[in-house]
Image 1 (cartoon, rainbow, N blue to C red):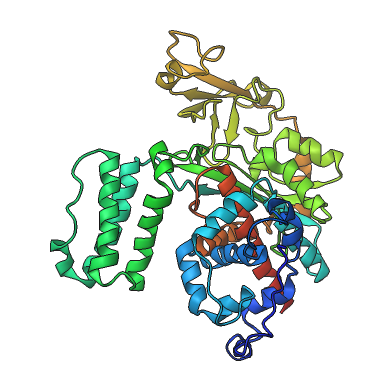
Image 2 (cartoon, rainbow, N blue to C red):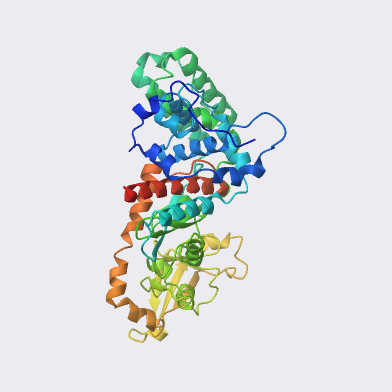
Length: 483
């Protein structure tokens, strides 16, 4: 049986919770707000019900992951804190004297029990249902935007990652005990990854067994990070980079290596849908999916608010066909419906440039044609021809021996007249002012819930991280509004 009775009445110490976990404690409020029995229903097929020893209650395991998302701690540190933090034990459905799990159980739970489950849509749907039940959702508008997350395994070499984490650990130790410098194992001085791994293992062993300060919180966090990197991530380190992560562009001069989370959020700041993609994907292409997912979650959508990335022709047509107001300012570089190779060249609104099929950003643009005659004017984008010469997609795109590679977009001033007229209305201008809310939500995800950097590698890991982080911020928002 995976359903285990989570009751504290048999513990002689259960009354402690009434003393040390007040009614306004966030974790107590989440327990009272959410019926976590849906975890049993979703995970029942992932357990063997008639053989082997009893599994750790899946609700407890799920709650551990939720605590990680709320408090941004490693597996080791979240379990360690649950030993002595009674609000954690209360939330986890444990008696005060109960032993905690082994941190490695969380890794197995993620990989074995949550595999092949669309946890992202499931958890968002649960929180939207809760918001509707609490009579919180009153608007029929969604705000759409995308936020980026850097890959855990970035473009640094595996050795550089290990060296950086070992350096931070040594620095923390030196601040506590300067004399440790003379006792530590000798640093690795070559470029052999195996030797660097061996050095890190020796460093960890020295600090744990000989330094006497391994349990000091200032030392423990960088120590645990290096241990997890060496013990759990050696195989990924050998890959040198996250295999699913891609280069995306935040502006013309800055890029990132990782993922994008495309979000839809109500004016009450409840996230109603999310699509997680690799970093190079275009923001505007996700609008239809975000609207449809929001509807499936139970949201009535009549208005969609977004920046210029969402004003492309397909989105305007989709909004019109589905009786939606699209509050997104037109950008002539995005809204062309007659340009060639639309699927191979996508506009990046942050950089203000087109990106080719291979992910290369144009290096400059120039407007051609007679001024004042918009229908004859074109914006021409120039690509780095040296990259084109060696591009795996050059056939049919780059002509061998050519000194330049360009992509041109016609500018037609008589298109999108209805949208242009709508832009001038007071309703459009009033709704546009709501867009700032989703930027604040993106900031909350990154700075309070660790969403600026991926906690694991691969798109599946990123989707799990997104599911737990969004579930956490939605629950917090519901509690705040309901108070």
